[in-house]
Image (cartoon, rainbow, N blue to C red; front, side, top):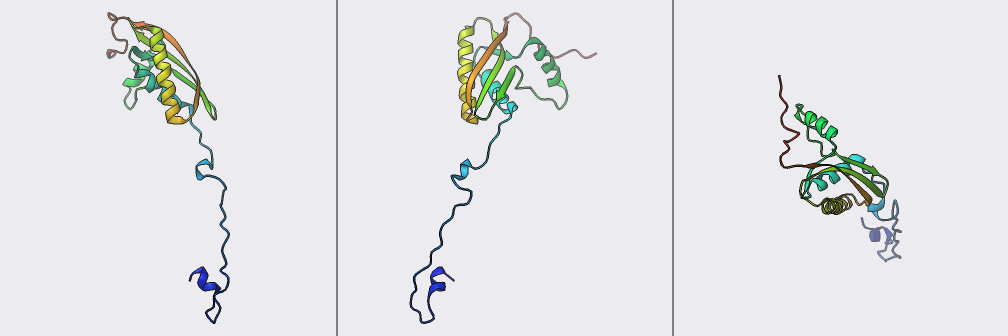
Length: 157
């Protein structure tokens, strides 16, 4: 039965149609209802992947963290730590990042740092909507061509 059918008289003559007042529940745009929180680890993963994509970045993290990471990577069920060398502080609308990188010998460290900042800021802001207020980069080492790979398979006796 329609609204109009309910308002007609027995004789079939129309009465003024009663309209329902449209009420919006919750108020405002549905996309703005509620809160989204993003964990530090999520931002660290995004930043780590973005930094590793830059040409001239050999690896991430200090020598000690890379050593522990290499051992952890070889444990069955372990996975590569994309957050190695990345620390994020995430607020409600902003984030700040600290990255520790190892660069390849022969590249311009300032150019690599600039490219890392640009790539990290773009990726984090695009994926999270957070404003990146700073990206601090510490270059902890330079990978020389003749150095053997630190993460070579360990000898098991």
